[in-house]
Length: 597
Image (cartoon, rainbow, N blue to C red; front, top):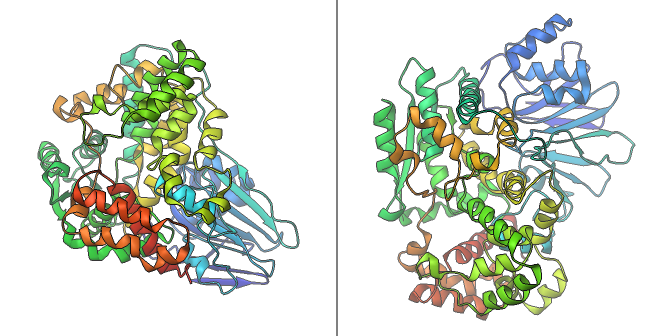
């Protein structure tokens, strides 16, 4: 649908989930004063609707879109804390001539904006929506290339195109005609700096389980078929267990496997599916599906190198064959300290507390720089990253651990001219600043804050949103319910990390549903076997990166260095798979966006 007025135009393409026929968009309010375009779901819209009816609001539809409109007219920007869900929306007030843009707390749904050369503002859910505008300048931001090489994605504080901005998670903008553009205003943030939750471990277990049940059941409301992604890990298995508890019918589940046995988790998923009697379906991804890479690049617009995007898209396609909504297990690692890097960081912070800073910088730093990079060696012998991390502050160490390509390696890739464009800027700087100013009490708090506000919206949620939307599937993340997140941020550290075990309290709480070999088996993650693929069926693609027309014409890289990286990987002398995949995705993105002349 399309709606236009003086100086404003709104367009929307709808995936109908609630009130299938009765909630077209753009939608006008009952009095005709306000109009909305909205992407997402409000899970508590029925409760809000009853409250608004008590205040005199009248509704013509049965969906959540009209509820947002009425809430905005009743409370203005203060409607946002009342909305439980995932959303990006725009509301235009025809009398006040204002535009209200808002994004959900954790950034599940995206929103891009740009000021154009004629003084107008354009906004869209995807970068490709802005690329359709003839006045958009297609000029690459060199700092975004540095960010991308560091993280494998372009984080929310940057865009691959100069001038394009992403509205940050938990922010809104209120814009007026003929007025200077208003800066984004924060309306929500997660805080770890409050008093730690008291009470017995058993009581906190029960409270966590209550939040989990509420989060899952609230996301099972839909007027279309609903199911779940199931990897067989703790998080997705917990979601499926609670769905099965709440559902009268077997839960529809699906999982994806790989043609490399070490990366395949389908047997674990099948076991959980059998345990809860789900209607389970499985498919596999192999290197022969590489031809899908251009379609994948088209979904993301910006370069995006999380290699699990391909299987995520495939599992979304598999789910869409039988359902329109699928619940995922994303968010628990960020909220409850489930990543190995968080557990390691907590232990490293204790070491930083007892080792003098001078000793760490001079002795451990020198050792780290001299230590060989041994990807092939057993983990205890791969000490280079740990030594370099301990040499700096906690924030510097965590930023180094989170980056895909460390700064000293990135520096060897760039041409002299591109290095001059970057100047003193390094991609880690914004993350370090965010951690140093985080509302937190400890190093573990700051690490989780970084993951929730930087890594989660930039990588995990971007991946799931783009691949699910490309399959016309709505993905819902119950473990990112903001009440669950806020509760988890108050837990004592010993209930998040215990010894080498992350997500301690979640695993304890789920023991009534899941066996220990599901809860406590080593974390595998959704990892695509690209190292094997780039030495085998995709070795030619790896070798071609150095001579790629797009990368070579960009002038950003030392192409001789890229050729050596490809040769070292193909011969097995080193594992450069993640970097080669990044370069490959960057190359395809430049071509797709037409950013290299």
